[in-house]
Image (cartoon, rainbow, N blue to C red; front, side, top):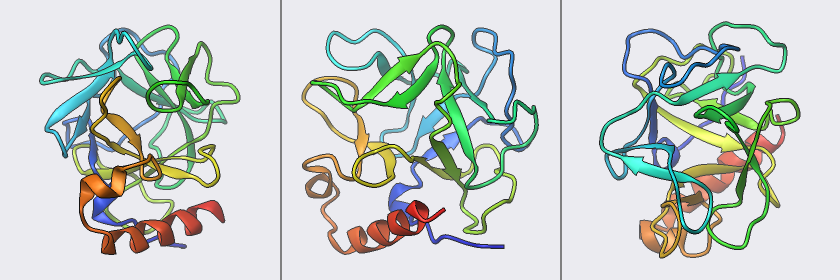
Length: 193
């Protein structure tokens, strides 16, 4: 199997809290998904009203709104590195890359079709392995321009504190430019998948 070394700097999410592996399912019902915990700020990313930017917020308690779909429509364990649609909440639920004036370049879609642009990378660098819940993972969007990029916590003045490693000022916030080389290397490897 192929492997990609995804640095800890971007493995900042935990999906769910159980001992099972992360799964896709086709019939999400409200608050019956996973929580999406951000280890950088110790809070859960979820749907919520924003005055500016996309309707995402952080909450201290998870509300189990995150869910995934696979392009083949199967309900099964998601494997590290495969394409998925990322949903948060009900309708519209599916996040996809699209430019906007304020906040992270994401918008909402009603259906997952054409939005299978996310990948989950677990702590194990080997591709094609199940992803255990409640373990550090990286979330990547393949459509970010000019290259795929990692979804990370990003302290914004306006909008939800979420961004990409290429968001202006992200590496200034991290304060460790040496780690950027490892992230850039992983991005190049992911772009070749």
